[in-house]
Amino acid sequence: MRGLRAWPLAGVLLLALGPARPAEAQQAATTRQVTVQNETDLKLDQLYLSPPAAADRGANRLGDAALAPGGNFRIRLSRDAGCTFDVVAVWQDGQEESRSAVNICRTPRLVFGDPATPRRDAAIANRAEVALREFYASPNGLEGWGVNRLGDQPIAAGGSFTLRLRTRDCVFDLRAVYADAREEVRSRHDLCAERAVAFDRSTLPPPVAHTLVLVNQHLETVQEVYVSASMDADWGPDRLADPLPVGEEATVTLEAACQADIRIVFPNGGAEERRELDLCTTPRILLAPGWVLGAEPVVAATGGMDPAPADPDAAEAPLLKLRNAGTLPIIEIYAAPPGEPRGVDRLGADVLGVGESLELEAPDGDACIADLVALFRDGREVTRPGVNLCQGEEIEIR
Image 1: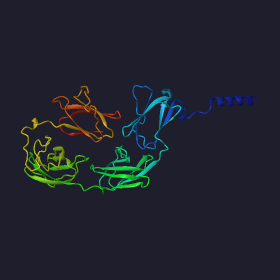
Image 2: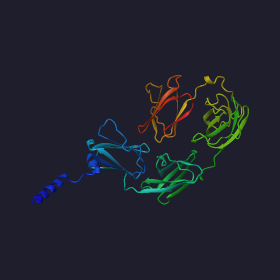
Image 3: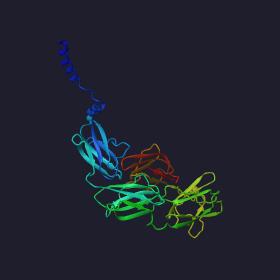
Image 4: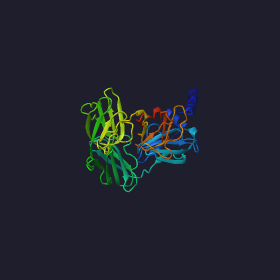
């Protein structure tokens, strides 16, 4: 009888204690979860959740990973954070979408785009011998090309990629931009009827060949010469078959647009560069002390050679060129002597678009050294301390 009376008590004790809750259940009791669903055809670069009327957006909830089209991402929030948030989504093209006072307790899923909108997938092949740097797809009749669908991932020669669009449209204008800046456009292509498209540069006219005569009136032999289109990402091959001694000249031929950059290298490894020369109006270049300083052609098209400046130090100092190599426009640029306030925004009401460049003057007379700060449209700042603005070089901000 004593054992029978003890059995119900033991059962009550087990029911009171209950089964041990797993760690995930305990975590769920202390956090809220919201699922982000991207039903657009653009990458979601950043997502911010902040209390209504907060002073700032807070941290990017996606971290370093963008949310691809068709993807989902789960965000965990402390229960102490409440239920109502202001939501800001930033897309890969820099556009923003804002939603005010979203109650994530009632709606724990944030859907961007319309899941009912059809998906269009097309296989894009690069059959050219040049890498594909950018690709655009715009509904026919719509102004502007929109976002670069390749992002920062070029397609090598012979490669391919899948173009994914979320749209009810079928007819698109397609634009391929190659590494040498030449473009190929296909107008009114029906992606619903033909889902495989190849670009091979067959519709492009043959490139124009330019002949450039280089005259060495410098102080020593020129060991190497590089000439490439100003839009190219690298210098390409050495154009000299043999070193170019002082007093002699060499002829190089290249297929490119008129605007080109030139780099000469001396036997000791020293180098000089000249940017954005017009090869169509300056077919003969004098390499002499000071040739990189002037803005005008250093040799006339008739072949006569202009003398080098008597005092190169007295010539106007070349300006630093800052190029936007990022994926979003730069909206503010500051250049100030180290340790001093930023001063005025050098862009003013303008923006520096992707791939565009800007020349910067020294902030204070002869003081060439400055700290550079560039602010991208998404709020990200890039700082380059101690930059020499009087060297006439080009730096990239990304």
